[in-house]
Structures are given as C-alpha cells and as structure tokens.
Amino acid sequence: MKHFLDITKETCPMTFVKVKLRLAKMNAGEQIEVLLNEGEPLQNVPRSCEEQGYKVLSIEPTDNKHHLLLIEK
Amino acid sequence: MNQAASDKKKISIVCFSGEFDKMLAAYTIATGAAATNREVTMFFTFWGLNALKKERGRKSMGKDALSRLFNWLMGGRNNLPLSRLNFAGASPKLMGGMMRKNNVAQLDELMEAASELGIRHFACEMSMHILGISKDDLIDDVQSVVGVATFLNESEDAHIIFI
Image 1 (cartoon, one colour):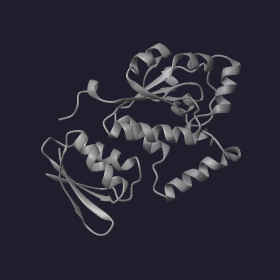
Image 2 (cartoon, chains in turn brown, purple):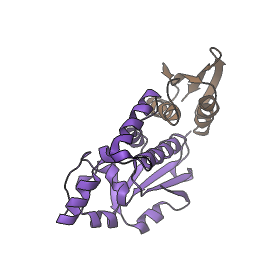
Image 3 (cartoon, chains in turn brown, red):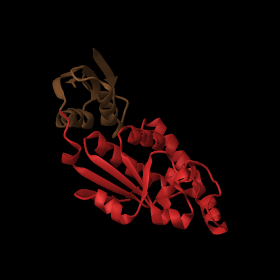
Image 4 (tube, helix red, strand yellow):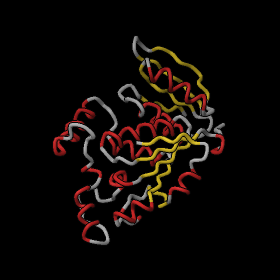
C-alpha cells in the first residue's frame, strides 16, 4: 500500500512532525510519497527519515518548487 | 530500524515563563526535536504551569484565598500574554490570526503533536504547592509531578534549554 502526504502548505516544525506521525502509523514495508517544498523541508525531511532508519527510495522534482519524496518504512 | 530509546539524543526544556510566544518556542523546539528522533522532556514550573491547566480560561483554584486570586489572575492557556507588546491581551489574539494566515502551527496544534510524539511532560511539585494546583487541575499529558532532583536525573546526558 502506498500512502501520500502533502506538506507543501506546512511550515517548520509541522513539516517533519507530520511525516514522522504518518510514518509511525504505517506498517513496516509500506511506502509513502511526500510532496514537499524546496529549501528547509527538502534538506531536512529526507535526512531525518534516514536517521530514523527509514529508506529514502527517491527524490524527484515535480516542478520548479516542489519535490516528491518516496520513503519506505 | 529505529534506535533504541537509550541511544537517542536527549533534550529537556524547562518551561518557566509561560508567555504565549515563549510557549510556542518551547513546543516548536520540542516537537521538532521529537520528530527528528530525540527524546524530549518538558518540565513546567511557575508561570509555565498555566499552559497546562485543564481550565483554559480564568478560574479561581487553589487552597487559600491568595492562591485562588493568583490562579484567577493568571488564567489558563487562553490567557497567556505575549512577552512583548502584549497590549492587555490583545496581541496574542492578533498574533494567532497572523499565524493562521501564514499557515504556522498554533499552540494547540503543537501541543497535540507533542502528545502524539510521546513527549514527556513533568510538572514542578514546588510551584504547584505554592499555587495550590493539583495534578487533577492539569491536562492528562502531564505524566507526573516531580521535584528538581527527578527532573535532573531524567535529564542526565540531555541538553537542557530554559525558556
């Protein structure tokens, strides 16, 4: 099952708080796509996910300002 | 695999001031730290306790006339003043509106996230004694009422931030 979360309208710290809370509710092996803004979220969300042992499978730009991050729990 | 709790970096935040903007700062750091895999403890003392009262408005509570007056004057989460330019309580409402307009998390939202993230809330025994507040007067997120020795033991190896 693939989950989806849009954090483009969130600001610090709710960007990675929402990702963390959603990941906590997922089962191991499940994947989530996170749509995020460039800058602070793009720099820190993937890094904090990796630090917590989640797999960052890909980061793809969707347009000039947004990126789609694929994470596996 | 997640790190074991004992391997996590630790942050302890002493919430002393209890002003609206300082509580926002405390909860922003707390939730940000917990979301980035740190073990977070918040210790509420003196004015900081006002943010944790179940009663969000002004309520006379306490064991004697003076503590009842103090608690009524201080109020709860809805009465937290801004640390600067408070203008008799008007500014926190204006600030709340500006935060909503800019999609910045409100104090309620941050406190809810703190609860979901498992942030530990301790209340200061001594301040509660002075103000005549009991644990039943505080929100359920308050894990226990402790003294400074317990707080320091629980904060061993932690960065301690005083707000």
